[in-house]
Length: 589
Image (tube, rainbow, N blue to C red; front, side, top):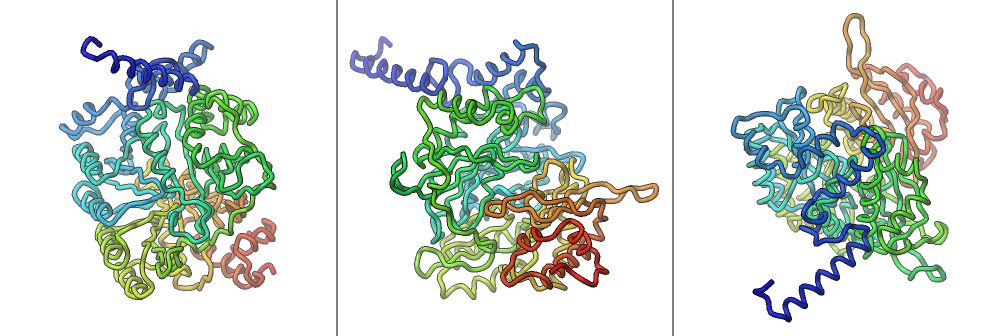
């Protein structure tokens, strides 16, 4: 300090006092933060303190917690580089720790990495899409998958190429940091944010700021388990915010309440449909300007008190179940340093209706004369050549912008009315489609056993078989969501599909074949509900004809304007099971 003037010393002392006060308000120990993370000198103090509380009570940390305790996952860049020099795949706990870089070694399905990106709201541009196509060709399998979190995954990356892949990814203005393991996954939001004439609020800026808060806050990489956050701005395209750990749902609040009138977010917590639970209403409303601070406080409470002994009980839902919402929210208020705002649900004006086909086909934007085109693809897969073609279409007919959706497809925004026909023709020339009537428009599939060791079936292959079969035989005038997931992790969220399929192995003599349990009637948002199991152990090659029979029954017996979800909700399980029989002569009315 001897090199500083008295004025500079006073400034630094005041700055340090302000930081200390702010950290105290957030429930943090005193000390200056490094990179927005935990207190120096130990950037992982939050995690260690939580682990120490477990050990002090005689608990045993899970294997993953022990691995994090031994080797800070974000400090392993040198290890990744060293492994690349000998093209060595990770072993043991290193498989888990490497996920902190967004790299998933998926052996035995593929002896290579899958890289999951971080693209909040699915917002990227043609230059980035073209660069990703080049990366997929140069170091991957020459294709990419659109995920159910507005995101992309690139597969078949050899260990020798992993560091260079991440470096070149960063040069594109993208990152994969913290997209796996016990981190906050990609921030999802409406892909039509900022252009949707129905939306209440453009949430892109919030998503961007929250993403950078996460990337620059070390303590947010110290969670007990993965964590999902979504923003619904009230637009036409649903984002499944009620399936997330934190769901922010935009509403309008009028005069006469305890908060300033305007657009607020309803706060929902604990969604995890793979464990049979949607996010539940808290009664709390959050001003958009406070969304990041409230998220941070929730995450700090979860970090401190989430289960670190049993991975199956480590998600936020289970802390909420153990504590109850009142206790949890009181702890959040203590961490935040103030009371949360509460408004009765009936005082919140409902958002506009979700358009089930909003992510498909042509839709007018709020900007006069401009449109977005929702591009249909097969279970989210794009070949590298198609990626380049999409980038060219976005530049030639739009503004160069692209948006990924949670429905495993993408939007090309800002297409003028006069360019629509040419843009649609160019999409078709790539072997893709834009029509909402295409059965592929509602098809969602996880990676399957072609690229995931947990999956019991080749979900993307079977999804393509279903789509090809239906395409040749049925004319759907409304999207029907068919979700195929390979295992209990439910990455494709089969419980919320109109038709949900979870893979299983079926005994067939001396061998086993791939098959599925079939659920019907799931939904989210206004159609919230878990699908009912209707049929078990359906062989994969029998799925197309059974689903055709079910959809034929729906088309024949529905009431005017009735969605598949509404029709299925009127049927009991016996009727739905009968409708799945291709030999059925009658259908429910």
